[in-house]
Length: 189
Picture 1 (cartoon, rainbow, N blue to C red):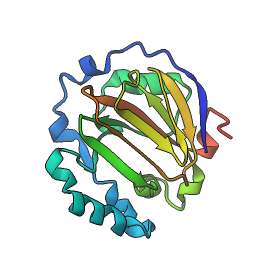
Picture 2: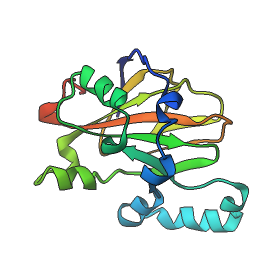
Picture 3: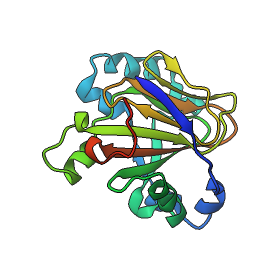
Picture 4: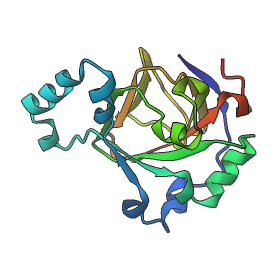
């Protein structure tokens, strides 16, 4: 389930904030297809399709890059804190032209490491888009395809099959916030 909550006012320009950050040094490159190896029987269909159609030759990369909380600009942390979050994990997802996150389930392994004795069912996930969607950018959860504006905030169920990508000429920026349900400032359900 994906549920639109409300639009947040974004008072910063994400590209200006990132100018002083060595993104290639601090970003974690997440091959979302790796999640499928452990949780999805259809993973082989993806790899066969990539190989058969030589997808990577044409510039589509099955991954995304994430900048985690400890490397984010203070303005982003202040923004999240201003929404009422107190104990949370977050990251900035950056997708350049040609980058995609194939359909997958998130495993919440980092959050479970930080918060012992938890599972992904103990979390709420919130997504805030930091720029308007342009043609060629997409994000879907199960059968729901989103058409977002800058600042749109969504709740996403942690057990949902989802994916997204960018085949536009502009970079897509998405803020992802994971909060234990007991610490969430929003009643997401």
